[in-house]
Amino acid sequence: RDLFKQSDVEAALNAAYDNYKGLQEGKNADYIPALAKVDSKIYGIVLVTADGKVYTKGDVTTEVSIQSISKVFTMAKVIEESGADSIFNNQGVDATGQAFNSIVAIEQNKGAEMNAMVNPGAITATSMVKGETYDEIWGKISGFYNDFAGRQLTVLSDVYQSEAESNQRNQAIGRLMYAYGKIKSNPDRATDIYTRQCSVGVNAKDLAIMAGTLANGGKNPLTGKQVVKTENVPEILAVMATAGLYDDSGKWLYRTGLPAKSGVGGGIMAVSPGKFGIAVISPPLDSAGNSVRAQKAIADISNALGGNPLASKPLK
Ligand SMILES: NC(=O)CC[C@H](N)C(=O)O
Image (tube, rainbow, N blue to C red; front, side, top):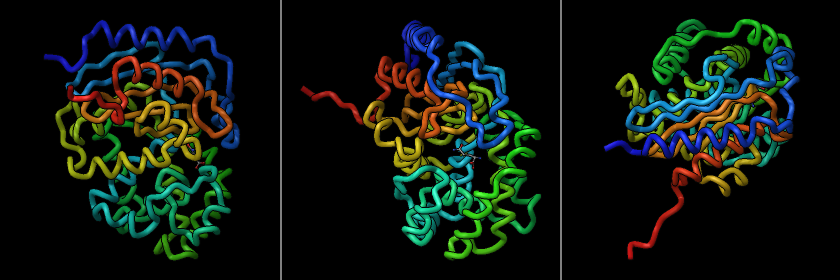
């Protein structure tokens, strides 16, 4: 028996797509010059059930840069390699309550309590991936992303170039995390690999399959490959739930209960454990840096399908 009725999922996707297609709120990120040029009208929704059914609506083929959503997968790699305590004991797992690239947050906590879903904790996570050379580390990170997506992803070189030329703030964040001893060596290399990971191109279907892998105990529901150990999935989702939508994560959790992650490229992916992964791409962002349409569409669809993992019914 399928986890969901096909007509229920289709109706939920259609309704959300139509309801928010005309919404004009938000604007593309522009602090990375290449992102300002991305077509604001891209709008696609994909839901992948834990039993491997794929539902699509709108533009599900155009790629945008994955940006901060990459933080989930690099952190997952560190947890796979070094255990769940590694990030807990180094950058910590608490929310900063500040913008994703806040330097004040680092200073307040001397580099601790830097959830890996915001830049200081994420650049630190990238620095923790084991390997001798840039190429070796990058090969491991990109190969891991490919396993989540079930296909070979590529770096959008215009986005990488643009961010590499304008990421002085992230370079400062990397060096500050090095100064506080959270990054052990090569902070500039970590920031550059982080910039590259943020430039990986994904479409809405890729992101939904990646989320679907986390919804299915770490096993890609389309390729059947066990990408992360099942035992590591709850910790990955916990970090997402705490800070996946930065300092709007509380509002998001209140509305949906879903661990999720957004990126300034306009994507959001969310995970309903044991049920589905869902992703929406729509570049215009709100002031916290989260896609306006993606938040609304995912919340509606998940609520229509009973996706909130915090909800229960009395037994009798
Ligand atoms: N929130 C994001 O998506 C930020 C990612 C972006 N590459 C940055 O570091 O600024």
